[in-house]
Image 1 (cartoon, rainbow, N blue to C red):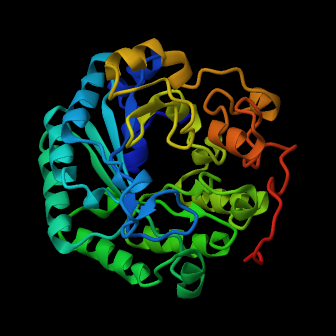
Image 2 (image 1 turned 180 degrees about the vertical axis):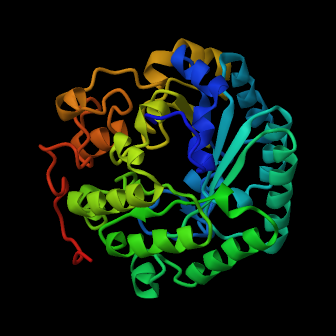
Length: 366
């Protein structure tokens, strides 16, 4: 982000800590995004995670072991100080609690974008993890994946409409357990169907004391182009949502367009549940190695330029006035255009970006 001064937005302020900035500025990874499993009961139709009732095989059986997770924490040698724990639904992983407390014990800040399906017993230990971390000046954040509060829209994009209320109950359980709202973040996905309902959702999160909503532009992973076109949001839809976030969280948020910014793209590495070391969990076919057949520290160190997406971007991203802070979303460029170095086609600062990239049978825009 352009400013390093604290703004009262803890998950954004985390990245302005000097010890993190020092690692990023010397060119080493600051954060590792670890996908611990791929099973989820959330039911989103656009997601590549496997439903909980899927037959064993394929994604359904992919689950990172605690032993391998502990090896991943060895990336601290390279400067990594933040661990993102992704799923699937992480709470379905029997070792998830142990992973969280292990990361805290090793001095890592922990970020968990959860499905939102949080039973009360899990809410209690998550709140306890926050308290333990806070006593050590370590940050712990929990994300809640809700795409809309509108039951009709939710039913349109979800295999199990009942999970909406379960997610609302999960958030309430987390807050009631003592997990502070300013360390909770919303993480809705912007699709064609949900786009018109996300601004009210964001305001609902803010009214609960949430300081940040990590809006994610739909990525066409695991779907055919025709099926993905059903969910692709328009550029105008994306723009309205990110401008609303900037209105609430501060106009500095616009310096990274609709992406997570250069700090994230060039400061994070990712590891899939299958053990592949990739630049981004959306760039799953670009593995530099696998932690089941090689040493994770050596793989990341050897592939640092590729894993940290140090690339020469083209077009509007190369000439953007915010290029110091942002290089555009490389996953958007690759998944929508087939060119990882192209200008981000889902950034509203890109004047050459189309309203939509995919063609197919689509549902009405909301």
